[in-house]
Length: 549
Image (cartoon, rainbow, N blue to C red):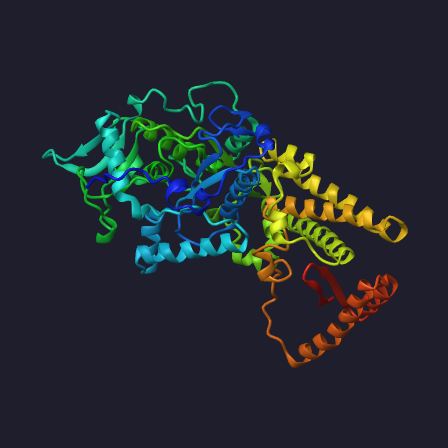
């Protein structure tokens, strides 16, 4: 049953970027990141020069994604983009949990095949990631595709004396295998459970808000895993590596192993897949803050007990809250991604999700979306005005070609400070204010060519900084979505609407010509006349749009 293949090195075998020379920016010397295990911000040094390996826990595809799920994806997408901007070659692995109790139970209740349900919701998550500009992972492995890896890993743990197989009265294996926590003296090191000192404030806030969504016991967010509550365990802390099937489990959700028929415990899949794709030790393991315990604590223990190094650094993104309470479907506050996108552009939603540092709690509210829309208006207004003044935009190749060493120093300092997005965003708007001042001087300055050069430099810097956060409005997916992914009201066009569209478009074209000729008085006159008629004009990078007040 074992898998004799060695873990695949994607940087040297299948990644096209492996043929590209690595040029790490000097700015990388200043990168400092928080580590959950040490509770400290420390200097980042990759295990392999010029390369970074990242594993992030992905979705359990039991139902539709909500904003709380996607916040973690956006947060680590920004982390990944900063490493890329620094010039590192990044291998980014994000798994899909497509077999677990919730998937099986919900599929049975709905009269579905469990694997069909899992695949359906996996596609929903993928669509949400793509819509919000999250980069595709280097590899996105499914749990069901890595049973041999998990079985091999469990066997190593057993061979090393850190697990045990539960047998029946006849001495035959039942399919239940547990990790022996008492045999592993390092257990608790990730979450500092053996310490009495106060943890860092981010973790303390999470602890005060309530139990982890993955914690065992009386948990208001998630029921206990029956396997982890089994009387067959030697110690209450022991956790399932492999689980005997429930009577209700379908036959195609069971796998034969040397220790009995069953399916994997939740934690084992990430240890197996991170080792498969990133090898013996990797730079960063990421995930939501609620995964610290027991998931990541157990994962760290079983990986090391199998004889493999664990991640060099653990990073956790904080929760999305609604009125101070953790966003959770079971609490009725889970906002589905489609419902949010129906009312807001994808750019605005991404900006709101990534508007604070990854390990800061994010309060989700209408006000957060209003502020994100205002940010888009400021960004798009400057980029459009600068493009008009320059007679065109810098190419995407020029924008993406900007090295971290050539970005504004305040932006670099913020991103190097544990990916402080709030500080980075402040740097962007500082540059936009400077750019707007330069634009206002163009008509009054004799050295207009010099000013134009400054405008272009500022425009390029602004777009490069935005691109680092996944927010350049002239990049995909925003361009294809139109008007930065503008939301649709879902109505079909009537003949009356078509006629109104034709009349207003004529006025907008006239206004655009006036602005191009720098006749801003005439442009304002057209806008004001439309406003008096009850028509609101919004200027964007793809042109002007209108709506009825």
